[in-house]
Amino acid sequence: MKSTVRFKVLGAAALVCGAVAASLVATDAGAATVSAAQRIAPARASDAHKPTVVLLHGAFADSSSWNSEISYLRRHDYPVYAIDTPLRGVAYDSAYVEAQLKTIDGPVVLVGHSYAGEVISQVAAETPNVKALVYVAALIPQVGDSANSLIGQFPGSELTPENLRTVPLPDGATDVYIKADKFGTAYGNGLPKAGIRTASVTQEPIAFSALTDKATVNPPKGTPKWAVIATDDHAVPTRAQKFEADRAGARISYVRSGHDVPAIAPHAVNRAIVAAADSLR
Image 1 (cartoon, rainbow, N blue to C red):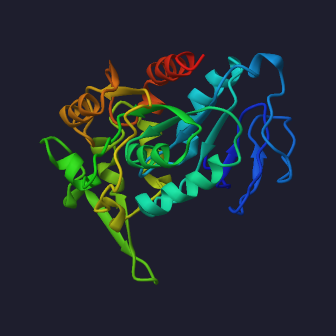
Image 2 (cartoon, one colour; image 1 turned 90 degrees about the vertical axis):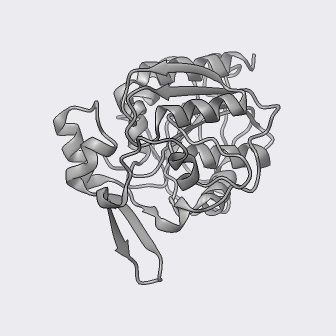
């Protein structure tokens, strides 16, 4: 299901919008709309010792890609949020997420899929309450790296010009989509056919300029990191994922999955998130 808001409230908690004008809507049936005047506070004693898990989607997806992880984390009493990032570029998206995280009290486990690996790396360097990072089939940059350079350093990506569709915008920017008939090959392999068809026409575009944005900071060395590496990834080559995870000193796990690991193999993501959260106790 497509989200109609930029920041979905998904834990037993509430949020102050701060500088970002976004509606906060509880996603489970029967939950009440959340007032923008409320602060995050654990609703049950069992929540008090658990960090907040914040999930960031990558290019060509939105926050609904985390639905399985959200259900699991809620069942286990984790405060959890999924942010719909604008996908306008590393600096813009990082600032957007940083503004959201300033409203969260206590430690945060920040989870990023795909392109969002670049975003969580920068956010962690700028936001003290980010205490652990989980990269899911993700890009993990060092200063000077871009999405294009990270993806292209090893062969195998199907995110090639002939598989992409570009849309010029009135403001002079350009959005990038995966061609609908190539979505299953380049991104969604491992999803059921019906899921591929739906995702191919509901995908969120990324700004073309975001693909060449260069990282200006390294992921903080002192922040523990986990990396879930997809072994059948046609978007970000598995070798690239491993190289970047090794370079960052991440704890690595492997899963047989295409690029959309959050939807295809949520169990692998859940294990990494829980391990990251447990490390903070």
